[in-house]
Image (cartoon, rainbow over all chains, first blue to last red; front, side, top):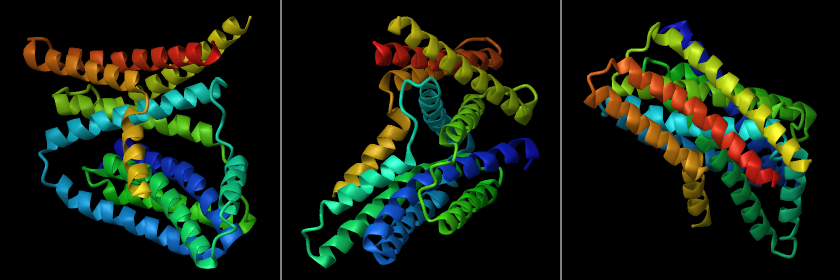
Length: 248
Length: 71
């Protein structure tokens, strides 16, 4: 394990988890505020259990796949996933699509849960629990994929998992202290950074899977990240210019 | 059942949220693979096509979405 590859892997897992856990936390908090902590905690625990099941199921399977095939498959998935994040982050930075607003999401979720007021108490708790479970499960899927993808080999699964767990602990600690949606987290900047790193990993591993020996080996990752960062920024600048031109 | 549907939709959206970008990126990967496997060129040529192909695709996809979103 070298630092040139471990540091980006752990950072990517930490930052991606930070973004996703903030999003899940907003919905779980809405559930807890409206229906109490019991359905929120049960739903969260259920979501985490399903995610843990995915990891336990996929982890041993990955060891059976030949290294080059695994590199290629995960490299391509990382490339598609990372470029998707980077594209959206560039469009948000350019103002084409709105930024993620945790306060608005909290209000929308609370309003949706409020629509079920006519139902029985037990039904309400069930709806609230499922809402929390879905939030944790859907946001957690991306975290699980990133942790497995960046940590699948070279002994990085544990450091990447620790990075993700550190992000969970940080969000929960911050949430417990301020007891509100974490709307001041610079989500788009984080998503931009994660998109850059995942795209760089994607190109690196897809290339290795195809049989390309990158010059400088792991250090090539840093060059790829710099190029994707530049491409994302150029894309955002051009997108902003296109909007201004069309508006005139 | 709804949760399962949403999980499947989330998984598809994770990798193929923007269909044109996904198809174009897979095409670039295929071209790079062909360059590495079926030509006598240095594999690094295939790697360079992969890297710069993806960078160009990303910028093009952002610009295309900007044009579609602004018009």
